[in-house]
Length: 202
Ligand SMILES: [Zn+2]
Image (tube, rainbow, N blue to C red):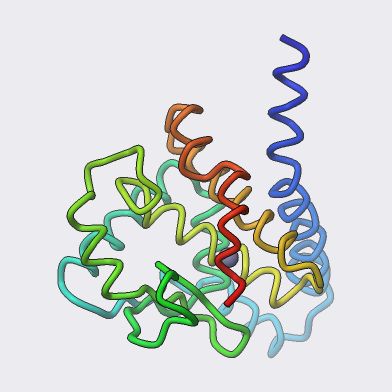
């Protein structure tokens, strides 16, 4: 029992690190300056804080699925919803994936999460299959994964690509856990064995 608990803690440590680091960052950026801010700065902060959900563009079925996923995230995984709204302004399909294996991606230039339309079409055929990585939970995992990368780009300078991806995978496991996905499914679709695919290498 103890061992199992410890393993769970270690599994989630990468994402916890991100959240804790971010907690400090948000306290420093958002809360501390607010108490001493000039009226102009305060107005700007209110505007930043009230930023809404990302704008979604792409085929109607894509827009619909992402919109529904965000509504579920808002209800069941509010911390992920908060990060998504804070760090992502657009979600769209794009024909320029870094390589063909990328279902979703982001980059340091723009607060946008991109989805690969070809793989998204494939996903539609397995939309109800919870056991596939690009199945039932693909949009949830992808949003948590790419949001983690956006946080990394903005606030954490990590050099090791494997560590960067491990942290994003841990964010996937965390969101799926909040959505009450069974642990065996979570391990199957977002376990650390996925790192062996090394999708970030060309
Ligand atoms: Zn990644």
